[in-house]
Amino acid sequence: MSTAHDLRARVRAAFDAIGAQVDLAEPGGPGLPASTPVTGEVLFTHPETTPEQTRTAIADAAQAFTTWRTTPAPVRGQLVARLGELLREHKADVATLVTVEAGKITSEALGEVQEMIDICDFAVGLSRQLYGRTIASERPGHRLMENWHPLGVVGVITAFNFPVAVWAWNTAVALVCGDTVVWKPSELTPLTAIACQALIERAASDVGAPAHLSRLVLGGREVGEALVDDPRVALVSATGSVRMGRQVGPRVAERFGRVLLELGGNNAAVVTPSADLDLAVRGIVFSAAGTAGQRCTTLRRLIAHTSVVDTLVERITAAYRSLPIGDPAAEGTLVGPLIHETAYRDMVRALERARNDGGEVIGGERVHVGDEATEAFYVTPAVVRMPAQTEIVHNETFAPILYVLTYTTLDEAIELNNAVPQGLSSAIFTTDVREAERFLAADGSDCGIANVNIGTSGAEIGGAFGGEKQTGGGRESGSDSWKAYMRRATNTVNYSSELPLAQGVHFG
Ligand code: NAD
View 1 (cartoon, rainbow, N blue to C red):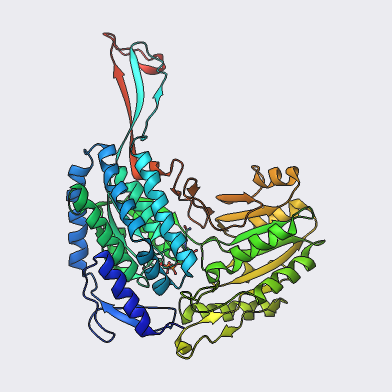
View 2 (view 1 turned 180 degrees about the vertical axis):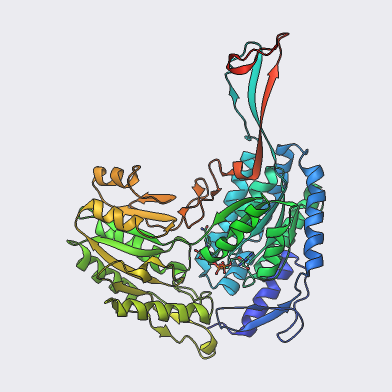
């Protein structure tokens, strides 16, 4: 089991390798705490960004935008290409920090850094494919077209559970689109952010890009609010809880800024009688218990046909019993810790409420890992057979709880899938093409992500990522998500010597 001493040494080694120059004081020093869920201890304290420094960071990014917006997009892509190279070089270093701060097992932490590399590759290609349309004009001698222009400063607010990938999704795309970025990471994961900032600064210096294209501001909600309220921030891309989005959305709208919200999920998988149960069990266990249930796309509701539910629950609980839980850095571990005590308390409360609603809880107990782990919170993932989709099932509890519901007709299953306020991810396990297509149809799943025969988590960067309803409606990453980071101008050019008006209007 890693000790706080080991973890500090790993952080320092990763910082040295990356070249991150920040004063990390021992706990008790001035500044904000940087903690680890692995042992539950504070590892360091680090400097907090003052309100004055936040304003300066925004001003710097706004100034950098004035030159970056006219830098040709393929040249902008060179910066992102270099960032991708540095991430390849330091993949293990950044992953170590993700494990220390977010508690992800090594394989998932490496996967998160790979996602950063993938989005860099995508953005580099995109830097040569930012396109507008030409549209047939109704007037002779006229050309009607769309031009996409850089938007301005993008404020990126991120959650603890994807401490680096979400920054990269936003930053790689925003930079090739000609925007500049100010990043406010979760107060729970400052170290990974400091490391990423060091890498982007090195990439900028290596390719001769202007300074201040990407700035980092560290602190809690107040620092985020400074980005939210500043009219120089053209787009606020905020990832986190529905509670946070409810605060951020109206405040940005108040000043007519743009907002891109990536909020909580409450994801379901439907398992039909025709499903390949081997495949379904594997997909369910990874989606529900992976990352200790702390992904926005974590599977939280299993909607199983009455004919398969008993077998499924038996097989899932058997798989859960064999899951190695413990130090996320240790080889073989599949389930790491919850992020903090509050997350554990939320889990206990949710299970209590589920029991009160008639739920039958299997698992969900605290596990003590190692000698020094008293402040850390490791749990066995829980399966809860529910008699109905009660209010607690409508909530996203950010912990490994899988509520099991049953259905008899596919319409009923789809209704259950859609009956929660969130709309991020969903899946159906079936070998019946009619059932699969029905789930994906307009009157099927109402989520931003709907999968067939894979779980709800683990999206690729090539698709647009995001969800509907209380998940916020934003889309990030691949496909045409880049359009959120640009402004559209519709241009009409008259190359004739006449001045015909549209809609046949005559004027004088
Ligand atoms: P959180 O809402 O507590 O915090 C997220 C970020 O918002 C942090 O940086 C925090 O400091 C900041 N913040 C909070 N209130 C703010 C305010 N009023 N103004 C400005 N900034 C504010 O979320 P968390 O606990 O870090 O992360 C878990 C949540 O994030 C879950 O609900 C999860 O589903 C969601 N999430 C969603 C996605 C997605 O893409 N949809 C991805 C990852 C996480």
